[in-house]
Image (cartoon, rainbow, N blue to C red; front, side, top):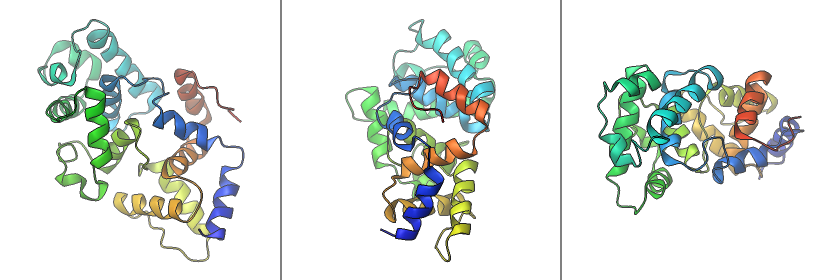
Length: 237
């Protein structure tokens, strides 16, 4: 453990409920719970870069109302069987990219050997390698990049980090505070590696660091909306 890295992370994390925020992912205590259909829908909805409040959340809610609540989609297998041009699916997701990712990922997960769909999602996410994401059956789907790949793994409860803009901002800020370090955010994969290095050099886990970045560099109103949607009981600061 590096005393310098620990001290800098402690300073950035002062007043931030990193552990509670990370535990919500590990324990599936977020707004979509442990419903594997909604977890996959959330990951697919985020592939076009929309924000949570105005894009991802309403998309998943439409999907839940049209397909989950009605019983039309009760498994990954049923989800994979939907037509890409299904009118209800278009109404829920809009962009073809999101629909394509949703259905293709469902096909991959439906073919896994686990006995239930949530176990299939967790099994895939546990073994998936972000550094070889483009060789992965889900990572190789058109529209899935390192961020989408890592986001789905996080939603499955895996201890990992997503190379989005908030994580890049935090790592760059920490790098500025260190005299020297291997931190590098020039590419998504280098950003992931940098997050792993920070976790190795401190008491913070990769999810802790990811959630610290989200809390610090997300607009306060959007942050509150996410916490409210999840029914979060963490101290909002």
